[in-house]
Image 1 (cartoon, helix red, strand yellow):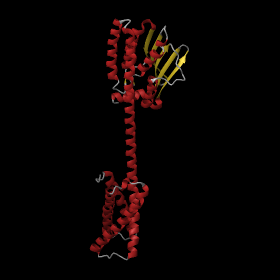
Image 2 (tube, one colour; image 1 turned 90 degrees about the horizontal axis):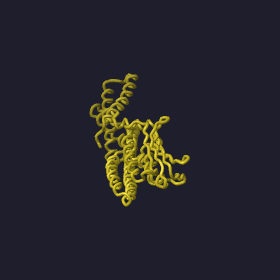
Image 3 (cartoon, one colour; image 1 turned 135 degrees about the vertical axis):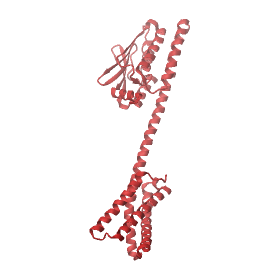
Image 4 (tube, one colour; image 1 turned 180 degrees about the horizontal axis):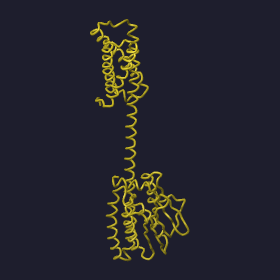
Length: 351
C-alpha cells in the first residue's frame, strides 16, 4: 500500500522540477542566479519531494483517503499548514548550517508558512483528485464485475430450470405410452436418455452451435412423434450456418411449448415447423405450430418467460422474442442482431 507507483514518482519529480525551474528562470532574468541560489533551489527541490512524500505516507497511514469530503478537508488543510511549517523549519536549519542565515522575524516566518502551505494545497488537490479518480475507476470495474457475476448466476439458474422442465414434459409423453404401447415406450425411453445426456452437456455452456441445438430439437420431435404418431407432423429447415452460436435450449424451449400448448390440445394434432433464416442484418429462430391459439393477454409459462429473460441478460436490446397468432398458426420468434452472433463467434475462436 505504501509503495509508490512509477507514475507517482515521475509526476512528483517532474512537477517539483518544473516548479523549481520556474524559480530558476525568474532568478536568472533578475540576474540573481548565482551559485548560492542554485544550492538553495536544489535544497528546496529535495525538501519539497521529501515533505510531500511524507504527506502521502500520512494520508495513507491515517486512512484519510477513504474519508468523505467534509471530514477530509479540515484534516488536509491542517496537514498542509503543518507541512509548510516543517518545510520552513528544515530549510531554515539547512540555511543556517550552510549559509549562516538566521531564521528571520516571526511575521516573515508566518508569511512563508502560508506561502508554502498554498503550494502544498495545490499538491494535495492534484494527488487527491488522482486518487479519487483511480478509486472511482476501481469501484466502477468492481460494479461491472459484480453485475456480470450476478447475471452469470441468474443465467445459470435459468438454464438449470430448463432441464427439469424438459424432463417433466418428456416423462409425461412416455407415461402416456406405457399402458397402450409398452414397446414404443421402451424405445422412447432410450431416445429420452440420449436427449438428456446431450442436454446436460449443452446446459453447462453459455452458447452452443446452431447445429447442436437443432440436433437436440430433432431428437425431441422424434420422441414426441413416437407419442403422437400421425397426429404430429414436423419439419426442420435451417438456412443459417451450422456453427452459428446461440444460447442453449432457445429453440428447444419454443418447440416444447408448441407441442404442449398447440399439438396436444387438438385431437387431430397438427404440424410443427422449426426454421432459421437471416433477414435485414438479423437472424431469426422460429417455431410455427398449428393447434390451440396463443392467448395474447397471457404472459406465458416458464418456458416463454425464461426465454425472454435469458435473451435480455445475454443480448440486452440486441435481441428479442415475440409470439403471435396468424390465421390458424402460432408463430414464436427469437431474433438476434447478426453483429452480436458474429461477436460470439469471434470470442469462441479467440479472434
